[in-house]
Structures are given as structure tokens and as C-alpha cells.
Length: 450
Ligand code: NDP
Image (cartoon, rainbow, N blue to C red):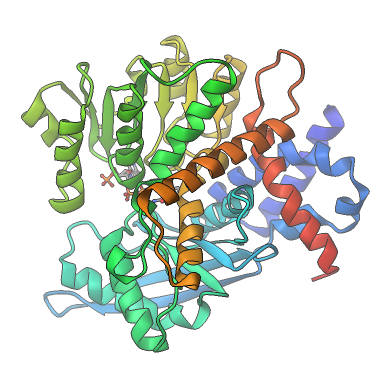
């Protein structure tokens, strides 16, 4: 055990030195390497091929300036990136994030995790991520459009249906994807499935919008079914009120759970009566159309507003962190444990920091890691690519059924690669990391030194 920790520390020291000032990337790699190291050490082919060293170095990173004109005719300048991390098992695939907190390190963490997640889906997709420090909040539609068009002038050189297929993420929803795709199409003079999350009128897939949230709840249900339980009747705390959160709530309600919270960057609303479908429809309108704040929920339906607070002090059986990275820190994990949480299922990417993840798992909490639990979004993006290539549109039922099968298969893969034994609970973190790693590593070994 000591030499295992020593190996991880040695590896991490080198990685930190090569990638200074990128704490999120260090964190994401640390979590993967501490579970993969024993697996790789027992397999000389991976060691000789230096797979971990190669897998933690992106294939390439494109960094570029995005100049645009605001409504007052002032010149604005942002920075954008596309991190093409690994295309061993398929074209690069991963979302674009627009948020002032975006840095190269954040996108490298997201792109790195995307490699494993995409592999877990069983579809032929490599890992990538991109974005900009542009803040869409408070901007007019025309400002967002001009920014997206300017960004695409550079990005279009680096993407394509067989090269790299971007999608949405924080701050990049249906509106942004439409502007991005509309301009891509003009520049390339081709109509192809080069972006996913498109509108239904121009090549989008049914269920794509719902897929990450639905998939996360399907994964949670699979974890519960595996121990002869179900989400029905369970109380849930959900963070965020964006794409992932809203559709996780929709599916949780449909499966009979009681959802108590939603949040945004201003605070958390708590509704002890439970958020029902009617209240959820109002929140969707608030967030997707009016772009309002979650605090308005309390004015409309009552309940409590916890300003500047996360939902994790609210007693619940299941926690679905669906907002952003590192939103469950040690103090939050302690509150969840003290209130008897049974499951944490990650809708967002890396929402639980490493220390909290260990604390929750040591406390007996069933932990569904993002790479597995939120893979439904990219899986349906993969299905959108297939439909675009076939020039077909599948029905809602067909896509949803495929999503359910994919989430069930991911769960099975996690169980297969988890190192649990006997009555031990399934170690989903190891299962997802090793299960996602094997296919990519085998492809890299087969390619030789590239
Ligand atoms: P959205 O932009 O639709 O929603 C994000 C939500 O999280 C908003 O409610 C936002 O509040 C809140 N939020 C964002 N940053 C912070 C912060 N720093 N502190 C507190 N709250 C914050 O994004 P998505 O729902 O698409 O993405 C949420 C998470 O899920 C991300 O981690 C993303 O990477 C991950 N994910 C998304 C997928 C997808 O298909 N969309 C697929 C897989 C993972 P506010 O509006 O106030 O900023």
C-alpha cells in the first residue's frame, strides 16, 4: 500500500511540475491515478508503453483570442480554448463551457475526464473540452450571437464530424449551440453533424436536452436496484437549476422520489412539500426562457431561501450535485453524513472534492462518480451523431430506450471493474476509472508509439 501511495505521489509530483497552476487538472488526474496505479502495475504492457504518462498529456491545445462588439459598440476581448485530449477510440468529443471561471486547467480537467466517460458509453468517441472566459449572463441575444460567431471563425478550422464534435456545457445551451452551428455551417459550407445539442429542426436529437439529468437518475436507480432498493419514496437534494439539474429533478419525480431543493450561484431554495411537476414547469420557464434567479421560487411557491448556501445542510436520502466542480467540500460532506445521506450521485463534473469523496465513501455512502453517472449526455450526443450520419431521426421512445440501455451497461461495467468482493459495496469510482481506461489503453498500445 505504501509503495502504491509512493508511486501515485511520484507521478503527481511530475504532473504538477509539468502543469503548474492547474489545480483542477491535478485533482482530476489524482483521483484517476490513485485507482488506476494498482491496475497498471499488474500489467507490464501498459507500463512499458507509459500509458499513464501519455494519457495525461493532451494531443493538442488550441488557444485563441475572440474579439467581438457589444451593444454599445465597444470592443470586447475574450480568450477561448479547445483541448483535444485523446482520439484513440473515436473523433474528439466534449462540450464548450462559457463562464468567467474558465481557465486552461479547468478545461484540461474536463477534457481528461471526458476520455474515460466517453469510453464507458461504449460509443466510438474520444475526449475533448473547450470554452471561454466569456460570461453570457446579462448579455443580450445579439451580443451572445456576435461572440459565438467570432469564436467559430477560429474554432471551425479545428472541428468536423470526423475530427472533433463540440457540444454544450455550463453557459452553452440551445441558444449558443444554434449560433455556433449556424456560423459553422456558413464557414464550412457543409451541413454535417459537427456540433451536438442542435435544435430539432436542424439535426438535433430528441432526448438530448434531458439526457444528462435523466441518465444520472437512471444510473442512481441502477445502483439502488443492485442492492434491491429503488429511488421511489426517497428524499433528494439537488444543486443547480440548469440543464442537468432540471431534468434530473424531472426524472426523479417521475420515478416517485421527493425533491426538496434546487439552487443557483445566489443560493438554495428548500421546499419541504416537494417540487412537483407543476412547480418544475415554472422553474424551467424561469431558467430557460426568462433567465431569472432561483430565489424567485420562494416568492411564488413559499418554502425557504438559503442565500449564498449550498443544499447540503438539508437532510436527504440522495444528493445529486448538478451545478459545478468542487461544490461538495469537507464541511458539506460532514453535514450530509450527519443527516444520514445514503447516496451521492454526481450529475456535474467533479462536484465532490477528493477529501470529501473519501469521507463519504468511508462513511458507507454509495458514491456514483460523474464519469459514469453523467455520461448519459454525451451518450445521446453520440446517438445524435449517428442519426446525422444516417440522415434519420429516431423517436423519443427509441432514444430514451437506448439511453436506458447505455446507463445499465455503464453500471454493469462499473460493477465488473470494481475491486469489491463478497459483501463489500461496489466501488464505483474504481469501476468507472478502470472500465473507461481499458479500451483506450488497449487502443494506444496497439497504435505503437504515437
Ligand atoms: P447550466 O449552465 O445549464 O447550469 C449550471 C447551473 O449550475 C446553474 O444553475 C448555475 O447557476 C449553477 N452554477 C454554475 N456555476 C456555479 C458556481 N460556481 N457556484 C454555484 N452554482 C453554479 O450547466 P449544465 O447544467 O449543463 O452543467 C452543470 C454541470 O453538469 C457542469 O459540471 C457540467 O460540466 C456538467 N455536465 C453537463 C452536461 C450537459 O449535457 N449539459 C453533460 C455532462 C456533465 P447560475 O445560473 O447562477 O450560474
